[in-house]
Amino acid sequence: MAKEPKQARDLTAKEAAFVREYLIDLNATQAAIRAGYSAKTANVQAVEIMARPLVKAAIGSAMAARSEETKIDAEWVLRRLAAEAEADVADIYEPDGALKPLKDWPKIWRQGLVAGMDVEEIEVEGVKVGLIRKVKISDRVRRLELIGKHVAVQAFLEKVEVAGVEQLADRIARAKAKAGGK
Image (cartoon, rainbow, N blue to C red; front, side, top):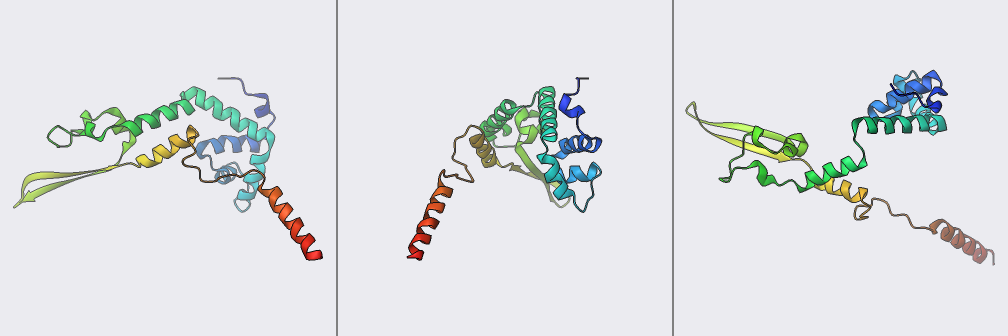
């Protein structure tokens, strides 16, 4: 096993438990509770713990180590998102329009592009005469948004920051105060 980083050795037992628990689901409040902090104050405690430099460093180191171990990093995520965004739905259908057997679908379709599938048998007087298959495709637009955010396309920004707004607000307030004082 890899040698523990110095900052991880400097954590208290509760902080180390918090770090381990945080890595499970990235939920700081739940990590605090599981690490033994009071459930009543866990949300406040979680914010304080996450602000501690040694805890931040330990979480960062652990996440980097996990990423290295799993070989899942930003590049992997982007490649996967791109493959999913470019997958052709025609790949899961036969030339006659019938749905291919699941075993014949390309791997990318079997690994998460389908959000659900309903198969309904059609019977007439107790005799099976056909099947209705409905395939629900997962949210491809969301994939494009994630790709756009990752490559800084800026087409999907949820918040736009404008530099100098605070200074402008201060100047307007001072000007109003001057005008009101006359």
